[in-house]
Image (cartoon, rainbow, N blue to C red; front, side, top):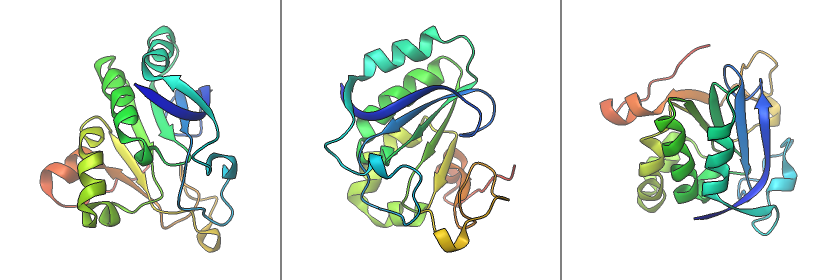
Amino acid sequence: MKARIAGIKKHSLVNGPGVRMTIFFQGCIHHCNGCQNPDTWSADGGVIYDTDDIIRMIKDDRYIDGITLSGGDPLLQPDAAAAIAQASKQLDLSVWCYTGWSYEEIKQDPDLYNKCSRLFRYVDVLVDGRFLQEKKSSDCIYRGSINQRLIDIRKTEKEKCIYEISI
């Protein structure tokens, strides 16, 4: 399967706990003011990768504790994101996913939710919500603004109630 990727950071300490491989998906419709990755907005940018090649990179890296799907917005390429997340879980890695949509917005859009439901089966933490410049805070660990949440997505999906985690 093909995925349009803005970049891959093999070892990151800022996109979730531990040493993580961060895959930056290309394409974003949110266009948050103050976004740190505006070069990922265009759906036509980046480089086309085969997800098998990304999975191979993850398997070959012995030094990571998990992966982070970022962007852009990975939910715009949910099948590719799900394939990478599933393979990572099979390697006992933690999986984090960032999105500009709130969980409530995703649930209210049946088409979007259906496209993302497979991905959510393999994600441990969903970091949701747009970056809001006026709510920017250095006190937010793994987030840029205080409106963004760290959601235990599998527990949330199972219990039908949002479970935020605190770090």
